[in-house]
Structures are given as structure tokens and as C-alpha cells.
Length: 59
Image (cartoon, rainbow, N blue to C red; front, side):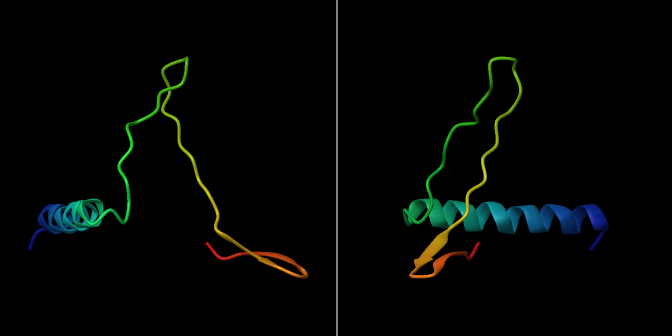
């Protein structure tokens, strides 16, 4: 398989997996956010476990 073909195959697997997760309501699609100057907005989050001695980031 050519390099471009391999990239396309990987992309198809990712798209299929994402659609499967969306249909199962495991993840939810959101529209792309654009800021007031026209730039794309991204967001990153962490998942935490709160313990008696503090908290632990596990993502």
C-alpha cells in the first residue's frame, strides 16, 4: 500500500470509530468554535480523582 493510501486508510478507521462512538452516545459532536477575530478555538480538559491528600490528574 502506498504511503498516501495508508494515511487514507488510517483516516477512514478513525472516522468510522468516531461515528460508532457518536451513534452509541459515548461521545458527542460539537460545532467548530470561531473567536471574534476568526480564529479557531480549541479546548483541552483533564479528568481528576479527588483524594483526601489532594487530587490526581489521570488524563
